[in-house]
Length: 126
Image 1 (cartoon, rainbow, N blue to C red):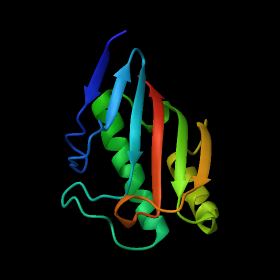
Image 2 (cartoon, helix red, strand yellow; image 1 turned 30 degrees about the vertical axis):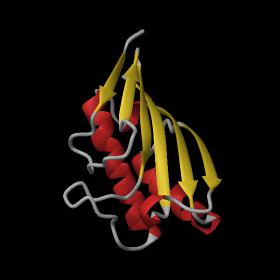
Image 3 (cartoon, helix red, strand yellow; image 1 turned 90 degrees about the horizontal axis):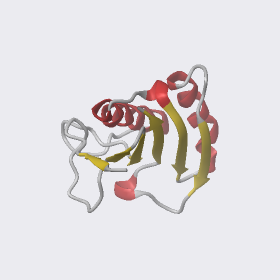
Image 4 (cartoon, one colour; image 1 turned 120 degrees about the vertical axis):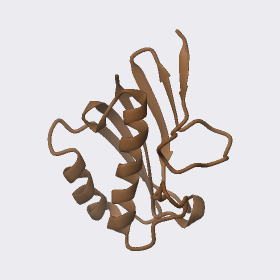
């Protein structure tokens, strides 16, 4: 099986040593997305909900470039800097996955890049 590297050309640019997504067969593996503004490359200021909404916008951009969409996501992993935000994540998550929700893991971590409060990675079907 060949793999195809997705550049994330519409997402926030990064020069870190990883690909925004990789397509292999009929699956796309999206690297963890943090709340970066695609226009400025800076983290979105504000509360957890604003950051989580930006993470979903970034996921959408990378998924669309891959030929997938949020509706085709089958698994996510969410990383939170505080489990106090778990309920808030669930509210944002329900808005973006109103039905047929993907499998999900959610873990608390001691920190995330650039001071983000949330990061989400995804696996989707193309």
